[in-house]
Length: 398
Image (cartoon, rainbow, N blue to C red; front, side):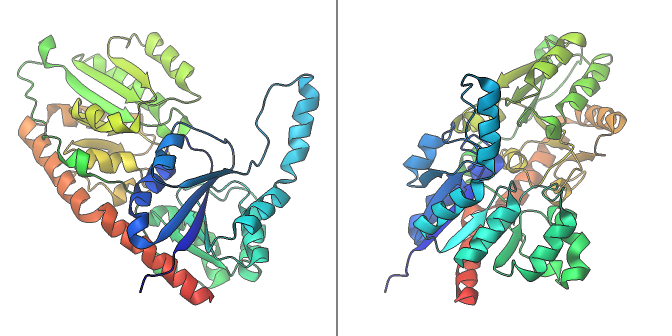
């Protein structure tokens, strides 16, 4: 007897590359096997760079904007006012969308208008899974949220991809709600690591640091915003260049800080050392990781970044900050090196440590990282955990 299909709608920001989008895209590969009918509803942009990938994975796509897209219509001041007023109608747009779709489960992966999301699912009597990905989800109206959660949002099931992120968001209301945060599932966001596991471990030997044919290749992947810490990294590399100039950093990503970072590269005369590639297609990420010797994640704010797990599976030695849930992924001095969040001196020190490390030691560290990725970040096991949560939610809600 076939199990009934579970109809799920994810509320996300956009279809542009990001940890959440990549995660959903990867778990959707197993939907047929687990009888899942999956849909993503975007709240900011109707389309994005991953639109075709979602369609190819048989994931339905819908659009319910919090604020109508800015079309620069004239007169602009009037259009801006209309957009602002229209954002107040998001409650009714989302209600109509979810009432029409009638899903079995709604998953909130986007914290914007979170209270609105919670209220609508309560009104429609649809179970909601709140998947907490970021450490700064609850910034405003925290006391109001705590009160509403206790008395109105009992249809909400919480999961998180990091223990740190969970505590950062909910520890303040633990005693008020009388909940045991240790019982909330921690399910690390991950992807299919098969292509990364095929990458041969790197074993570059720097015989003479003055020889230009022994340039050490650093690499990083991330959106160019404040949270990823690239300003800090560029400053640290400027100091590093005073002692060791044979390095090259490639950053795969784009975002609002690109112009600022490009200006910093020029200001510190690092144009020959640092290259910002812009957005790299997800299918090209294994090739990118295969081209570098050391992966760097200088984030100042994080959840449980998929990019680190991909670098681990690629058997790369990793240098990362201890922001967010990163210490839950990287074991310091064994699967990578951790530096203190936003501490530029410590970052400079650990850059020198990993550069001066023997190639055999770096290779050993990369292989330890790969072993951990295989053991803890298997996409099939992750999908099974998620399906268990889905079925438990429906069972308890019936």
